[in-house]
Structures are given as C-alpha cells and as structure tokens.
Length: 233
Ligand SMILES: Nc1ncnc2c1ncn2[C@@H]1O[C@H](COP(=O)(O)OP(=O)(O)O)[C@@H](O)[C@H]1O
Ligand SMILES: [Mg+2]
Image (cartoon, rainbow, N blue to C red; front, side):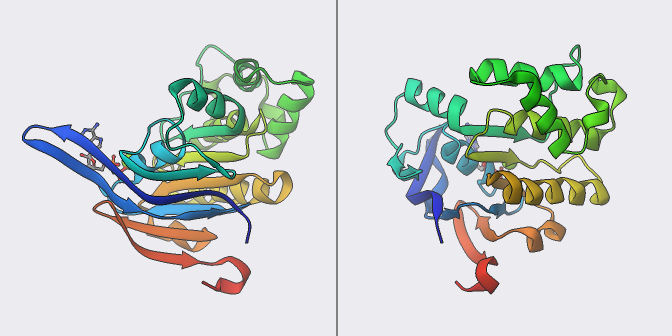
C-alpha cells in the first residue's frame, strides 16, 4: 500500500480560559494513495481540527505530519501556502461558489489562482465533464441544485490537479441520494485521476464507501477500518 500522507502522534492544544484544551491527543493515521479516506465521528470529536492540520491550514502543537514523503510539521506559513496552492484542493460543506460567475468561470478562476500551466479551457471542460456537468457550464450557481453546486465545487477543487483533496463534511447539506452521488464522483476521480480524498462525516451511511475509515472520539482514533485489498489490516 502506497501512502500520500501520515501523521505521527499529532496533538493540538487551543488556549482557553484556565489553560489548554487538547482537541487532538495523539493522532497517528496513514492515508493510502489513492484512496477515499474517511474521518468519522460525532460533532466536536476533532475532525475539522485534524483536517486543517493535514491540509496544511494549521500546524500541530506537537507530532509529525508527513506529506508525500516530506515532513511538513514545522513548515513556514509561506511553505504551507505554496503546498496548498499546488498540491492540495479543498471542498467545504457550504459550497461557496462565486455567485456572479458561471460554473465554467468558477472553475477557471480556481485555475488562475493556482497559476495552472496549460490550456485553461480544455481543463475546465474536462473537469466539468468528470463531475457530469458539461451541459451546465454556462449556468450561474443559483440556477443549479445543491448537489450540482457541490459538483462544481468538486470540479473547482480538482482543476489544478492536486494530489489530495480535503473535504470537510462535503455531504453535510445534501440529501442521502445526492450524498451518494458525491461519493461516487469521488470514487470515479480516484480511479480516473488518481486523486486521494480525505473527507470528514458524521453520517453512518457513508462509512462503507471509505477505503480507509478512522473513527475519532475526543481527539483520539478509537477504531480503524481498512477496506482496501479485501480488508487486510
Ligand atoms: N480555535 C479553537 N479554540 C478552542 N477550542 C477549539 C477551537 N477549535 C476547535 N475547538 C474545540 O476542539 C474540539 C474539536 O473541534 P472540531 O475539530 O471542530 O470537531 P468536529 O469537526 O469533529 O466537530 C471541540 O471541542 C471544539 O470546541
Ligand atoms: Mg467539523
């Protein structure tokens, strides 16, 4: 099993009145490449805190984050920013498309921000096709359903060919059928583009779709399920 990312005993403390609150108490996980890796757990368990750290938005208080073979635990803000811009994509629960731009323009804008080297038009259309929205390229966000908007957000996140995408509760505002559609698009992209997805969720119905599932409770991993290669651990 190849890996794209691992953490070693990652801890994160937040200063609060009267001392520190330890949101992560020593997390060691491996994210296989490519895979759909799920961080599950109820609200307040530490999923977003962990996602922000492995997504290079935040740094651990202690412990290591190894991304693509490189220790990024002590990376500077600038190094983190570069990493995010070039190698990482993000998808959030609230879709946050730019409302005055079409689906096409939203994806193209992301390519510009990333300084993508290549044919913008071809890549935008390729990404919209990958999420099944070729025919919606000229639609504005408000002309799209919630699920379609989330698919534009996926197209936008994958456009600059990141190695990994972090998705924080990407199905949190979608109904069950639409949630499954999003998961199946992730699966498709894992197969076709070799991208790895790490997503958080508290929806028990989605667990079976993860190649690797880590259950988090009170800042600790309390169970690991490896569904790759017939489920060997
Ligand atoms: N900036 C912060 N300051 C203080 N406490 C925080 C901060 N961010 C998160 N927490 C706390 O850390 C715990 C985990 O939060 P979070 O990672 O958002 O959980 P989840 O995403 O699983 O719902 C919660 O108890 C939350 O209140
Ligand atoms: Mg969260």
